[in-house]
Length: 120
Image 1 (cartoon, one colour):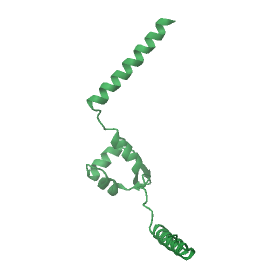
Image 2 (cartoon, helix red, strand yellow):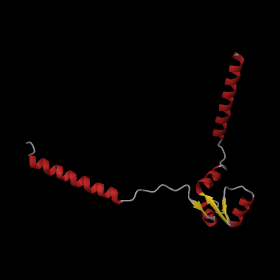
Image 3 (spheres, rainbow, N blue to C red):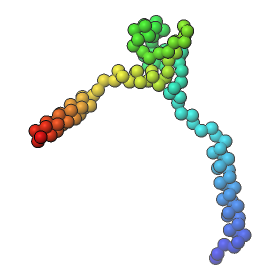
Image 4 (spheres, rainbow, N blue to C red):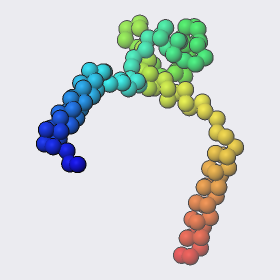
């Protein structure tokens, strides 16, 4: 038995109501904000942010030795989160596999350049 026009209209109306309620739900919730990597940190926030939780004196020593990226406005020290993240990643030690791959890549490049040089 085929649905009647009224039944079709009821199904379309129900679909529209459902779509409308889902759209309203989607637009009413705030989208997740991406973490702001260019956020400015003051000295206290930096000490809390870093994984090693250094003392303020330690950070002052790193600033004086120019070991850490920083900005200075008057007497106030400021740090960019993205630069601190990059600075922290510079301390990463390569795994044995990464080191072996790097050596193999350099060796292959060297042998290829020698092979080209010998053909000339």
